[in-house]
Length: 306
Image 1 (cartoon, one colour):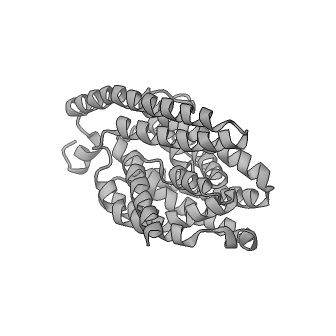
Image 2 (image 1 turned 60 degrees about the vertical axis):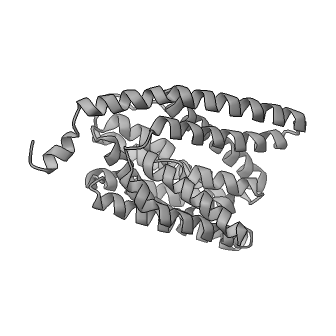
Image 3 (image 1 turned 90 degrees about the vertical axis):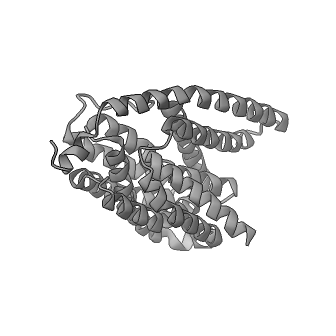
């Protein structure tokens, strides 16, 4: 029972982060499952199965809250779903060693993406040129879907920051559209993993998956309502730092680093992450001031005031 409860808590926290920041559930869940020794294909499959009910509830809640732009949703979901299916088939076909190297590298990279994005307001994934243009949405969805399936997560870290740049939507609409499209992407990836079901079925920790689902479904409606209202930079910095620590330890174990080195880096990382999170609070304060001065234009237009 404690095992189920632990994963329910993890799923709730991961969904809270994902629903408010637009990224984090897949990367966080896959990181935990890999740390348990689950094979990369099984970890990604389990993560996407867990995403199905959580993203459905989150997407519907965002829709009811008016946080989803239909055109953006379609342009992301269709190519994202196609290439999520392709990515799942590719991951199942990789050797275990190659899959572990690929997935560990992706998760470490996306941990760094999230950490720098919210801790330093810096982007590792370059923003598309010319800002607000719909033509970038299909390539963004394509890349996000493929990376998400092969890495166990990555839809949010790829798509959310990009949408912040190429659309004029307020943060709540970006997060809502990304979360809604993620359900379609997770469904397509899950279908893709069925092509290798005989290879991964016995390795999937179904009790852990059920825990992730239970926690995520319970928290999803509340997280959707808080989208754009949380201290995003502090929360994102802490989550990105956590992902870096866990996957960094996996890499150190893989290269045979001494335990003392791992513990030393772990302690230094904790101190550094907390310090950066305190610094990141300045960005949240500036954002609240800016939002207080600039009303949500789309919301005002929806009320008929503009």
